Length: 147
Image 1 (cartoon, rainbow, N blue to C red):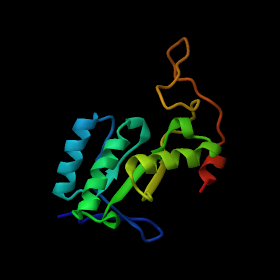
Image 2: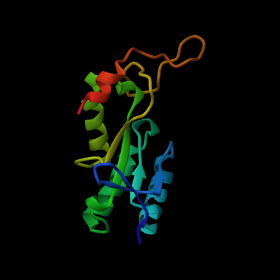
Image 3: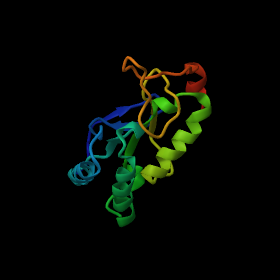
Image 4: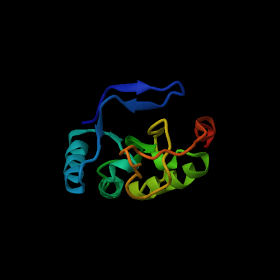
Protein backbone atom coordinates (compact mmCIF):
# COMPACT_ATOMS: atom_id res chain seq x y z
CA UNK A 1 0.00 0.00 0.00
CA UNK A 2 1.30 3.48 -0.79
CA UNK A 3 0.03 7.04 -0.60
CA UNK A 4 -2.76 7.51 -3.15
CA UNK A 5 -2.84 11.31 -2.94
CA UNK A 6 -0.28 13.40 -4.76
CA UNK A 7 0.61 17.03 -5.25
CA UNK A 8 1.41 17.78 -8.87
CA UNK A 9 4.15 20.18 -9.93
CA UNK A 10 3.79 22.44 -12.98
CA UNK A 11 6.10 20.08 -14.93
CA UNK A 12 3.80 17.11 -14.28
CA UNK A 13 5.98 15.41 -11.64
CA UNK A 14 4.03 14.18 -8.63
CA UNK A 15 4.94 14.18 -4.94
CA UNK A 16 3.14 11.98 -2.43
CA UNK A 17 1.02 14.24 -0.21
CA UNK A 18 2.07 12.38 2.93
CA UNK A 19 5.72 11.98 3.85
CA UNK A 20 7.98 10.99 6.70
CA UNK A 21 9.96 13.81 8.28
CA UNK A 22 13.30 12.78 9.75
CA UNK A 23 14.11 15.92 11.78
CA UNK A 24 16.90 15.27 14.25
CA UNK A 25 15.87 11.69 14.95
CA UNK A 26 18.79 9.63 16.31
CA UNK A 27 20.08 6.86 14.04
CA UNK A 28 18.35 3.95 15.82
CA UNK A 29 15.05 5.82 15.98
CA UNK A 30 15.11 6.98 12.36
CA UNK A 31 16.05 3.48 11.20
CA UNK A 32 13.06 1.94 13.00
CA UNK A 33 10.71 4.75 11.92
CA UNK A 34 11.81 4.64 8.29
CA UNK A 35 11.43 0.87 8.08
CA UNK A 36 7.96 1.10 9.65
CA UNK A 37 6.97 3.97 7.36
CA UNK A 38 8.13 2.17 4.21
CA UNK A 39 6.31 -0.97 5.37
CA UNK A 40 3.15 1.12 5.89
CA UNK A 41 3.40 2.53 2.35
CA UNK A 42 5.15 5.86 2.83
CA UNK A 43 7.12 6.81 -0.27
CA UNK A 44 8.00 10.46 0.43
CA UNK A 45 10.97 10.88 2.76
CA UNK A 46 12.08 14.35 3.90
CA UNK A 47 15.76 14.64 4.85
CA UNK A 48 18.43 17.27 5.52
CA UNK A 49 22.14 17.16 6.32
CA UNK A 50 21.59 19.29 9.44
CA UNK A 51 19.38 16.51 10.84
CA UNK A 52 22.62 14.49 11.00
CA UNK A 53 21.01 11.19 9.97
CA UNK A 54 21.25 11.00 6.17
CA UNK A 55 23.76 8.10 6.36
CA UNK A 56 21.36 5.82 8.24
CA UNK A 57 18.50 6.89 5.95
CA UNK A 58 20.70 5.93 3.01
CA UNK A 59 21.43 2.56 4.61
CA UNK A 60 17.71 1.79 5.00
CA UNK A 61 16.79 3.05 1.53
CA UNK A 62 19.59 0.99 0.00
CA UNK A 63 18.37 -2.14 1.85
CA UNK A 64 14.82 -1.65 0.57
CA UNK A 65 15.88 -0.88 -3.00
CA UNK A 66 18.48 -3.68 -3.34
CA UNK A 67 16.12 -6.24 -1.80
CA UNK A 68 13.47 -5.35 -4.37
CA UNK A 69 10.92 -4.31 -1.72
CA UNK A 70 10.68 -0.92 -3.42
CA UNK A 71 11.91 0.63 -6.65
CA UNK A 72 13.82 3.91 -6.54
CA UNK A 73 11.34 5.34 -9.02
CA UNK A 74 8.52 4.74 -6.51
CA UNK A 75 10.22 6.91 -3.89
CA UNK A 76 10.16 10.70 -3.58
CA UNK A 77 13.25 11.85 -1.69
CA UNK A 78 13.65 15.44 -0.55
CA UNK A 79 16.72 16.93 1.06
CA UNK A 80 18.01 20.41 1.56
CA UNK A 81 21.03 22.60 0.93
CA UNK A 82 22.41 23.19 4.44
CA UNK A 83 23.14 26.68 5.80
CA UNK A 84 26.89 25.96 5.54
CA UNK A 85 26.45 25.34 1.81
CA UNK A 86 24.24 28.29 1.01
CA UNK A 87 26.69 29.82 -1.46
CA UNK A 88 26.84 29.09 -5.18
CA UNK A 89 30.35 27.62 -4.93
CA UNK A 90 29.27 25.11 -2.23
CA UNK A 91 26.03 23.78 -3.77
CA UNK A 92 27.64 21.00 -5.83
CA UNK A 93 29.79 19.78 -2.93
CA UNK A 94 26.80 19.66 -0.57
CA UNK A 95 24.56 17.96 -3.11
CA UNK A 96 27.19 15.28 -3.73
CA UNK A 97 27.62 14.72 0.02
CA UNK A 98 23.87 14.19 0.47
CA UNK A 99 23.67 11.86 -2.53
CA UNK A 100 26.57 9.81 -1.15
CA UNK A 101 25.11 9.69 2.36
CA UNK A 102 21.66 8.77 1.05
CA UNK A 103 23.23 6.22 -1.35
CA UNK A 104 21.21 7.65 -4.25
CA UNK A 105 21.96 8.75 -7.80
CA UNK A 106 19.38 11.55 -7.79
CA UNK A 107 16.96 13.48 -5.60
CA UNK A 108 13.37 14.29 -6.39
CA UNK A 109 13.42 17.66 -4.64
CA UNK A 110 16.36 19.76 -3.41
CA UNK A 111 15.48 22.78 -1.32
CA UNK A 112 17.44 25.66 0.20
CA UNK A 113 16.97 24.94 3.89
CA UNK A 114 17.18 28.47 5.29
CA UNK A 115 17.51 32.01 3.88
CA UNK A 116 20.95 32.63 5.37
CA UNK A 117 24.44 31.15 5.22
CA UNK A 118 26.95 30.18 7.88
CA UNK A 119 30.69 29.48 7.49
CA UNK A 120 31.32 26.06 5.93
CA UNK A 121 31.58 23.36 8.57
CA UNK A 122 30.83 19.69 8.94
CA UNK A 123 30.45 20.16 12.67
CA UNK A 124 28.40 22.43 14.89
CA UNK A 125 27.65 25.98 13.77
CA UNK A 126 29.78 28.78 15.20
CA UNK A 127 28.23 31.12 17.78
CA UNK A 128 29.22 34.67 18.69
CA UNK A 129 29.77 35.91 22.26
CA UNK A 130 26.02 36.64 22.58
CA UNK A 131 25.04 33.10 21.60
CA UNK A 132 23.88 33.95 18.07
CA UNK A 133 24.75 31.74 15.11
CA UNK A 134 27.58 33.34 13.11
CA UNK A 135 26.34 34.05 9.61
CA UNK A 136 28.31 34.65 6.44
CA UNK A 137 27.55 36.51 3.23
CA UNK A 138 25.73 34.82 0.40
CA UNK A 139 24.18 35.82 -2.90
CA UNK A 140 20.79 34.07 -2.78
CA UNK A 141 20.07 34.63 -6.47
CA UNK A 142 23.42 33.15 -7.51
CA UNK A 143 22.91 30.14 -5.20
CA UNK A 144 19.36 29.63 -6.47
CA UNK A 145 20.54 29.54 -10.09
CA UNK A 146 23.09 26.73 -9.59
CA UNK A 147 21.99 23.55 -11.34
